[in-house]
Structure formats: C-alpha cells, structure tokens
Image 1 (cartoon, rainbow, N blue to C red):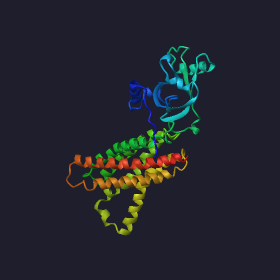
Image 2 (cartoon, rainbow, N blue to C red):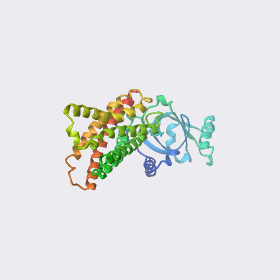
Image 3 (tube, helix red, strand yellow):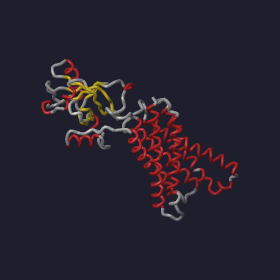
Image 4 (cartoon, one colour):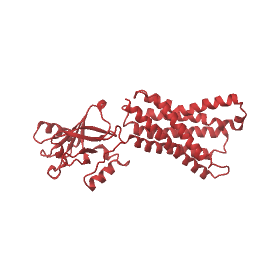
Length: 348
C-alpha cells in the first residue's frame, strides 16, 4: 500500500494562497511565487508554504522579511531536506539559512535583488537558500512521496478533458452531416478529426512537458493531429462506401477490416512515438500502450452508444449520446495511457 504524505498550510491565508497558486487561472502568480514543502525540525509536521523566490540555475533564494515575526525559516539554520515546485514538477533539494553579515548573504542577496530591482531589502533580512541537484539526478516528488507523485491523476484529468473536448468536434459534425452526401460527410469528419487530435495533443503536452525534458509541444500536437486524421481516414471508408460495403466478399472484407482496425489503433501511437523516441528510452512501448488504450476506449464508446442511438432521433439527442460515449472513451484511454506513461518514465 502506498501512503501519501499530507502537507498542511500554517494558517488560513497560506491555505488560500496555495489553492490560488495551483488554480488554472494563476499563471501570472507562478512567475515569482511557488510552494515549499518540508518537515518541521522539532514538531515533525509536514508543512506546505507559499513563498516568493528568485532563482539562479540550481539555486533558489527566498527572502525572509520581518524574520522576527516568523519561525519557519529557523528549521533551516542547519541544512535540511526541502522540496520546491518549479517548472511544473517537484524538485527536492537542501535548504539552509544565509545569515546577515556573511559573504553568502551578499551573494544570494544580489540574486534576489536582480529579480526584484525596485524592492528595498534590509541587510538584516536572512535568506533561505535551496540548493537543487542537477536535472539528471532529480528526484521526482516531495519527501516521502512515491516517484512521479500525482502524475497519473494529472494525466487522467487533463487527457480526459482534452479528448472529451476534442471528440465533441466529430460528434457534432457527425450529427450534422448524417444526411449529407458521402463525400461532404467524409471531408467534414476528417476536418473534425484534425481538430480532435490538435486539442488532445495540446492537453497531453501540458502534462508531458513537466516530465519529459526537451519535449516540444508543437511537435507533439502536430504528431497527434496527423495520427487522428490517419485514424479518421479509415473511419470514413464506410461513409464513402455506403451499402456497397456489404457486397464485398468475405475474403476481401475481413482482411480489409483487420488492416483498417490496425491502422486506427496504431496511428496516434506511431506518430506520437516519432516525437517521444528522441526523448525517452523504451518509447516503443507507447505504441502498444495507445493501441490498447484506444481499443478499450472504442469498446467502451460502442457499448455505451449502440443501444442508445436509434433511427429518427433529433440532432441534439444524437450529439448528447455521442458526447456521453466520448467521455467514457476518453476516461478509459487516459487511465491506460497514464499507467503506461508512468511505467516508461520509471524505466529511464
């Protein structure tokens, strides 16, 4: 059983600030504000604290203003482990106090002053200095947390939302063009598939950038969009063929269905692998991970929508059923790919 350490904020205002800091609307706050996590030297409590900071490479500097009114910084009069949230991930380091009057105090004070040039900083204010290890030696979570703490949850939340929003495009388009000419419907569905892949890729990249060094969001989004269009190019074949598809002999229809299904299941995984292979070892597992995930997701979608879709239904009802199935498909796909992502990252 994995036990996740619970951190508590020292007061109501700190708790509110931490909630604001991690909200989607707080991008501006995160430029100079972050969260610290540490264990109290005497109390043993696990504390989460919002702080303003300055940074120079692997050194993080925190000014302790009105130090006589605060006690948290005294935990670091001797070096102690501490974690800080930077660049979308937890970074573990060692914190210590740079005392006023020391050479180190002048040096880290210059780092802090450069970040806040208009701020008047009394020479009596101590600084808490956090030294971080090099990125390739970086632990992946706060003290006591499992590797890649919270990554599966963040991936599932973001990818489920991304695929649901993305799939809304083909769900709506499919309802609108169900009575259109086959060629018109096929083109519209391919365009909607490109939208689906772009949206999904953007939501995936938001999480991947925090755990895959050097990943370029644009390349990932483009690869996902191309994979989605390839999958939908197979999906529109029944639309173009219409009733004539049933006249194909089994010797042709069965192999064609197998090949088409294989392309649908592998397309996104292969195109995303072309980006991921430059950044991670064992990236080939991603192809099979996405194939399994989309198999399960499409099965969930079919099981949900097939008994509900009936001839003569309104466009609104057809769309609502499609979106409901899309949510189930998205959650299934996100859960499976998230588990494989953790497996690949832990194998690095």
